[in-house]
Length: 206
Image 1 (cartoon, one colour):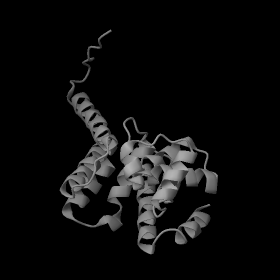
Image 2 (cartoon, one colour):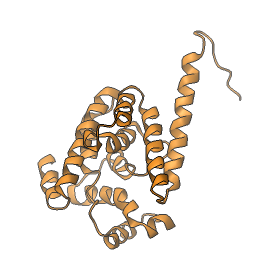
Image 3 (cartoon, helix red, strand yellow):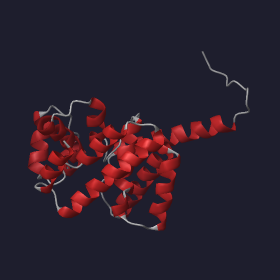
Image 4 (cartoon, one colour):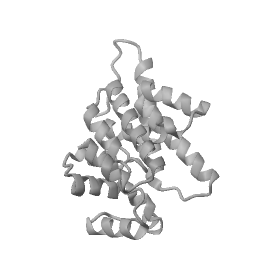
């Protein structure tokens, strides 16, 4: 299927975008091995995450509506935000992908979502950090974190995206903020657990 998808992408995205997509595919596979996730699923989700990237706004809206997706006002006014969800539709209808975890990872790669699966977290992070995105010191540090702590990497990726959107005076979708806060809470819980004395059982309210 990989060759079939790449052939389709070659006719539907720019060469620059294709190189980004292949970078996301490879980084998703590497992160999957690192974090105990199925690398085949990660690679496929990474390869298909931007299938609808170059679809015109009218097509994005129409496909989302035809598939019964809930379209909020922000996405209606900026249909490009729907390209992740529509990419999942193309993966399902054009290439026969039925694995819901893969389809959800494709759908979540732009805005994120609270309670994301590790697979979704991997594609979300890889989309922002694959090597073609640049080699600034900030990005290099973020890549190092992605190998060590997936949820801290999600939080950093959200912060990075939010900073860009604020500086560019662009619209911020609430899902990105919700995703950031969700990942932050997991990282805080991990920190509390790691500092808890061995043998001490935390009190659970009943």
